Image 1: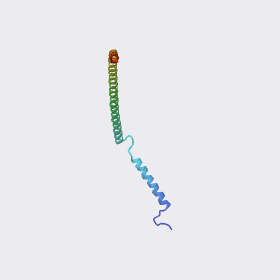
Image 2: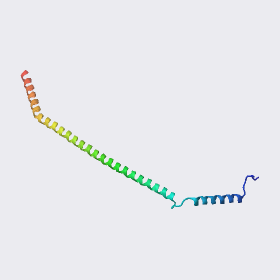
Image 3: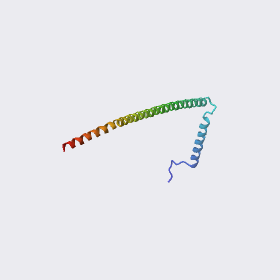
Image 4: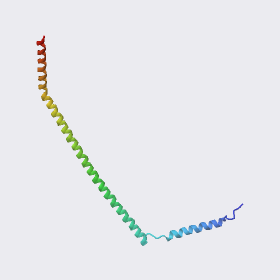
Length: 125
């Protein structure tokens, strides 16, 4: 059974042609590239693009400056660590020299104490 609301092929074909014609008219009604409104829009887009490029360049300059400062800070910290290591090494060497200087005295003192102990032990027998 056919639906009474069904349209015939010619109705559908006519509607399709009308839609295509309306779309073509709408396309033709658009302003061309030499239209003042289109030129104004193009100028606005170019201004926005130029401003965006300027912002990106500024951000890149700021980023480069931050990286430079970070590198300077890293070098400063490395230099401080190197100086601290040299100071620790000098303190260690000074402590070692102090121990080395006291060693003969300490050895001599131990030898004297040992000799006194031995001599005290021999006298008791």
